[in-house]
Image (cartoon, rainbow, N blue to C red; front, side, top):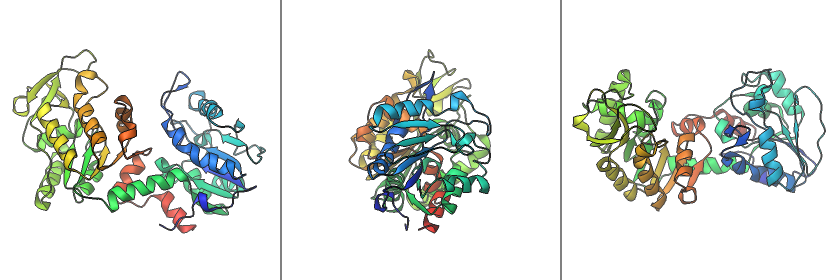
Length: 391
């Protein structure tokens, strides 16, 4: 792709505005997983080392525009950065309205951009205000690349120079390697609660992969499509025909969807619920499927062991509860042990990787969720489109 790169530019004495993805989970004022911040630091430190005046902003949570909300403030992020950078760091509020100073070798964190009225709808006046603050705009938030907002798209239209940051390019390269030029056999693992939220990606991947593996609530809809009962499990009746079409498409291509033969059930979703493994033919009306059974997981592990490219988005069970976590744990460890190129993305996927402590053994962990899926579907992401246009 023809995109300007941060690392190729002269940054000395330039005002550099970086859009990062610092949308991290925060509980009681403390960051519970700093992965996205750590992934964003290389672009920030590169610009600081090159003598730039650096501004960085991000969204956090889902605040109402025009209203400050302490729980969605970037204050905890600023404190984290202060402890991880050897540069002065300060937070600036109301930055789209009130003038502020910057200086080379200093980092200014601009408060949650979604506090600004017009951010999400890409208001042109606001985008031009953002652009007036900088000489160079750096898009480094691949997780928001599918959003056409003032801080992800509009600013890039009006600033003098627009480029991609270190993390953004790393994400792109990993996605291209896995999806556009994969080594085969290529498998995709798609989990999650609803087929409706991932129907497009399932349909697209069914045209590309050698094997498609489904888990979670999505698997229940496919189990139903295969003619089996799912009891009182979460599934989507109206999407059973779509699941059947995907199964048929895979079959006609000579690809496959490993047959689910056994599952782990309970009567209710509860941390203390007893787990029972059942043959898929023996599901009762009051059973709820919360994980895949050993035989089913063994088939998945065999697919993983034979694969050369693995795309993974979503767990295959309710791994938050230990009695329903065995399937996801076994699969996660198999991916970690595989010599294949493995690309993992999505919040729940990252949570599973962190729970089972295998991050160092996954080839690339994407910080993106929706953008990851839309790129995999073959959609043109707005942030990529505008960076190409500004090349």
